[in-house]
Length: 248
Image (cartoon, rainbow, N blue to C red; front, side, top):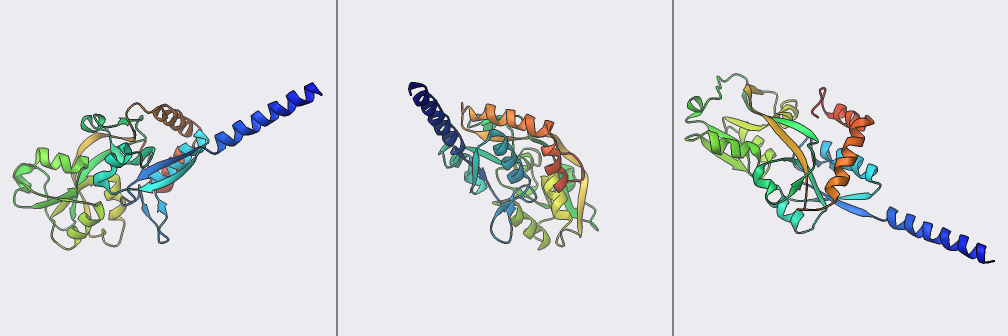
């Protein structure tokens, strides 16, 4: 009888441990306004490359994950206020941001490139852009690059990338600087077909990472999961769904 009790107790402990592990839930923060990396579908569900990579990482970590959306301007404060556990929203790894958060290994690489109307002579050097109005999303690498490198150029910054595109098509902007792959997606749209890339990328070493709170051990778990989804082909399947080339 004593042995049966021990077996029963061991089984109960195992079940309790399994239930506890399965019950772990993490929240991932996403802007949901930056297609094709993150946006909302017609039903209001968050979709995109970032969301699918986040889901794949959660599956590898064997945790349930839910999405919490946040405006871009306040997305790092929201992370540090514990509104979500990690931030996977196409965020560039910069020294300034490293003062506020920790980053995982990069999960894709990015470039910055201008777009403007196809039938317009649009040179991308500072002298040629004098007198033109150039847009970018606020608090992004593109916005910072314009402010640091385009002295004298009229730079307009927007709360969302979509609002920058709206001003471009309405004629209030002469061009936009943004992530090449975001521009690539928009140029395929009906609104973007009259526009094209201009010049060479102005920045080619932009690395995109997942942000976590300072010192949070989830960074190690996310890095391990990232290596696993790259090794087993999961990353490539998601990549190929959005791009005909690798962005890793």
